[in-house]
Image (cartoon, rainbow, N blue to C red; front, top):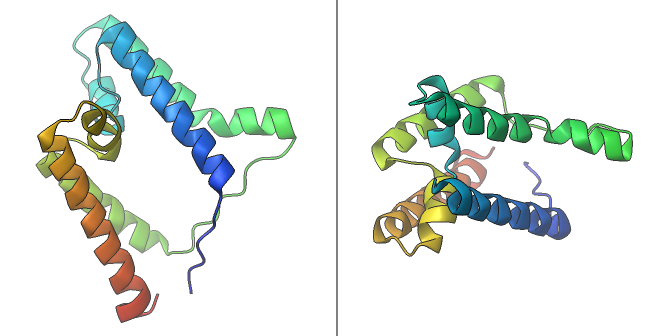
Length: 144
């Protein structure tokens, strides 16, 4: 059985940091902080300035564990309670969803909903419902 970790302080801290970062990106560059859009724009940047902010933001996302290590002296524990095949299949499904939904949870869920975008509200409700259904099926129907 997959155990769910309850981490209210870490979750609140992360949420605050994501909210501040997305607000600063919108205020300084007028851009929405959607992780998928940032990554796609890094691969195919419109300008060198566009590449620079995307690379800096992605570097910040990737180096987070190193900062934890520097502060605490140990790397954060990462436990993935599913198989590599399940991760790959899930990643492909999310990639298809991001393409059809014209964005990801961070873009629609954080930035779009903050702007009261009807499209983002519908997108967020859709992928939350799909997430709830998936967890229910995996845990209670299939028995993972």
